[in-house]
Amino acid sequence: MASPTSAWLVIGAAVVAALQVGKLPPALPALQADLGLTLVQSGFLLSMVQMAGMLTAILIGSLADRCGLKRAMVGGLLLLALASACSARVQDVWVLMVLRALEGMGFLWVALPSPALLRRLVPPERMSRLLGIWSAYTPLGTALALLAGPLFIPWAGWPAWWDLFALLSAAMAFCLYRALPGDTSAPGQALSLYSSLRATLGRPGPWLAAGMFCVYSAQWLALMGFLPSIYAQAGLSGALLGALTALAAAANVLGNVLSGRLLHRGHASHHLLWAGYACMAVGSTLAFSAFTEDWPWLRYAGVLLFSSIGGLVPATIFALAVRLAPDERQIATSVGWVQQWSALGQFFGPPLVAWVAAGSGGWHHTHWVTGGLCLIGAALAWLTAWQRGRMQPDQG
Image (cartoon, rainbow, N blue to C red):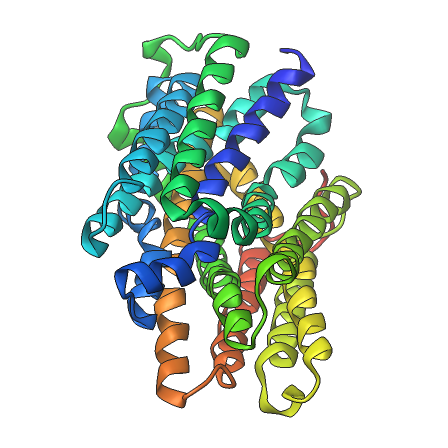
């Protein structure tokens, strides 16, 4: 096993990659002013980073298994740095969307090898807890970007915001290259691409995990992605806007870490999933339905409930994806399939919510979308437990 510092660097690299996803929401008001973005175009720009994942995540996961986990992560960070630096120098919406898709590909090259690399770097008894921490990389990166963005962008502009993340990605690539041990798997140990895909997709578990992540990610990115715009329309700005949206995103970290602890103690996966989806449904109802319109702090409490306890869902699904992989050589492939469906959810979620909001003249029907997605997720969680044939606690 490598030093504990190596494992934390892997988690840090995932957070830096997530910063690339989270950098856009606080910049949307500036982009709408500078480039004339419509609400629906903003929704597609939010979700465009998921285009690569929606189309190629399982292939990238399988290729990462074959080409080397360290090489994949370093290359992904360099691609993020290049795409972000180029984005800072364009003024065309469609070019910006293409570059966001490239950032999505770089994000995958960083995120998908991470669980398999952690499994090699840490002892098995620490894996559930560390996966719970690792799975919080998206909300943590999003929260940091949401907190800093409203302060940085008015001062330096959104192009400098993009340049900042290009530098961060390049610096993290250098740190990983210097600190992590080299890839040691011999080429003969890796399965062929066809065999890896067939072994993974021939099992029902990865499909069910992928569906659960799809309905989770669709609603989480939609709600978090539009929070800055919603609060800006309500008259909030600057530090208060950044603090409220960052706290909402950071609350998700609590659920992720709690999930790792509960799984380690033997709690059943489907119980954690049901609790997460139920709180997301209740929280989104409090946050958006008409009967809370005169209670802004009750609405915000709903957002916090949605994000915090909803964080049980992704950490639990990532733990399931690692366990359901055919063997260690296909962990990145299995996580890639889950990430591919997560990207699909993140691609259609923001435009769907934006379409409903534009059609109804406000955000008060959003909870019908999120509530329906939660019901689908809860049903898939039950089906997963039934299919596994083990309605008893999972061992960490």
